[in-house]
Length: 167
Image (cartoon, rainbow, N blue to C red; front, side, top):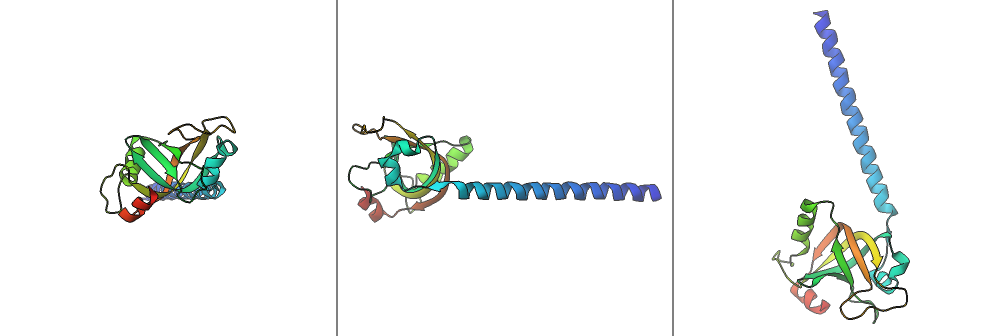
């Protein structure tokens, strides 16, 4: 009987120790993720559009309006000064399931209906890549920068009237 009690006690201690280690590791991962989010600079989209080379290769956070259509996806702000343009948006998902989830949320209007050409407000984190040399403005529908979206932090559906204003 004593042997069984000793083995049971040993097994119980081992399980509790393992659970404790898992909890500590999960807390450490959570703290690392929270501090990494705080370390990401929030940059105005108008500034990114005007000076894409300043942010080339950097990971930043921005608030913008996301629009998707058969021609592609863009990030823009209606209140940018004249000459500042929309930036090409590219979903840079960890895997297909994440991409599908983002698309499902990003490509819906305020009523939850799928859309083509409507817009949603977003806060996104991503990497900037400049497409032209400094001082050279883009031509036609080609934006001066590409924003590779790594994370979608917030999606705010816009009403029909808000979408009409943004066009």
